[in-house]
Amino acid sequence: MTATTSEQSATGLHVAGPRPADSPDPTDVHGPVIDWFAEHARDLPWRRPEAGAWGVMVSEFMLQQTPVSRVLPVYEQWLARWPRPADLAAEPPGEAVRAWGRLGYPRRALRLHGAAAAITERHGGDVPREHAQLLALPGVGEYTAAAVASFAYGQRHAVLDTNVRRVFARAFGGREFPPTATTAAERRLARAVLPEDETTAARWAAATMELGALVCTARRPDCGRCPIADLCAWRRAGSPAHDGPPRRGQSYAGTDRQVRGRLLAVLREAVEPVPQAVLDKVWDEPVQRARALDGLVADGLVEPLEGGVYRLPQGRARGL
Image (cartoon, rainbow, N blue to C red; front, side, top):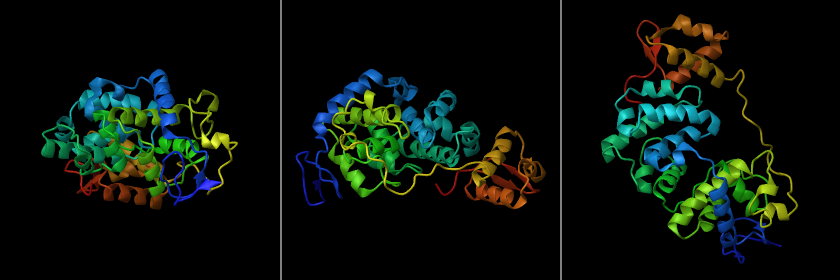
């Protein structure tokens, strides 16, 4: 029998929709996951005390849809060049796009530059502690605000990234994968299973994220290494296969994203504005190339100048 929206099981969780009646009690799960994290957490630079709140914020922007291995070298270079938000804010946004390199989704660089400018103007150059103030920064959404407040300042917030959502879907929901987009029910679950103690809650947030990244992975979950395998609702149900909409990976080759990346690569390497004729050489299909370039201009990633030349943006990033 499953618990429904109107029912509350012994776990004390109030979660919309059906879920397994044997969903584990969060208090039984907190300790093993946090202890596992203490032993197996990766030594990542943004987890070190010297990273500070700015280092945490930079890492959160960079890690969105990008693996740690690709982020590490760019992160180190970024913090060496811009150790404080004011250092980044003092430079044109195009320099942030240039330093972003091949991390992908370069609008994140503009958003991070916009956040740095706002931090400098509104908060004296210090990343704010309050969740509401973080959320008010340009380019900062609910996830990033919660992550910075939790990881940088040790506060009690539900931090829901893809890894955490997958751990919760399996451990508490008995499903192989979470929904495609984060739902209100997932947010309620995340708040319901959050430890009451602030310090413990912050550790729990980091630990569940690491568990999803290293053990409870999407393709090959290693249940033999999982500290809560015996409590996991999905495993106790026999690890049923995903029965929702097909999960498709994102294509890249031949897409506008690839064309945009090639155009930006030319502009990042250029010291002077780049003529249209040079950009025309990066992609043979003229309609797609023009569409990609127009999109970069519309997104504020490229500035068109008189005479048919282009450069990375030099003024304040717009629309962020």
